[in-house]
Length: 171
Image (cartoon, rainbow, N blue to C red; front, top):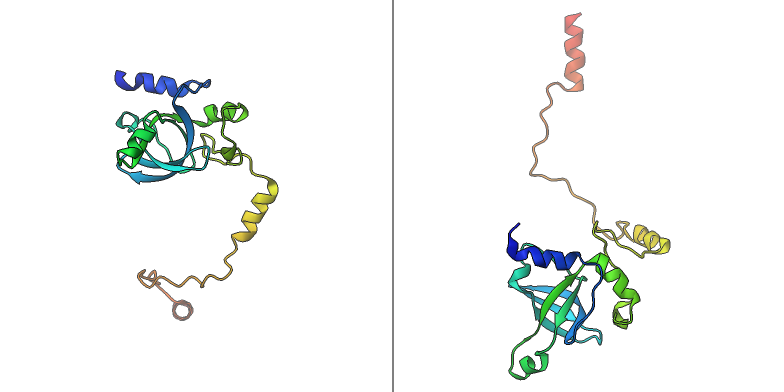
């Protein structure tokens, strides 16, 4: 690993995290492409944020993950007509989000969201929710699966009738 991203990874591994002035926690709503993401703040307001190039190939985000965003120049950027209002300063991982959820810094609007841990499994699901998902996975209302006509059927060497007649000839 090159030395330029060493401090970036070290900061991501820290479990204890404190928000500084001008920073807020936001949830990723969608990835817009070319390092732009749509985020939602604690008041439910949506805006565009820039995901800096220093995070490329070292940290990945997806819809529903949490990021720390620097909003110092948000009003100034919106007044000048820029659509990008803020800058992502840190990506929060599962190990960092868990303690933050219990702290008073965590926005109320995000308290009902489910988290995915590092293995990708959802945390906080009840058994009734899991049962509802299993019941809803039935194929009700879907058309039957059709046979793929592009596949060639395997060549049968001998059919049942031929195998019986050939065994009769041998005896």
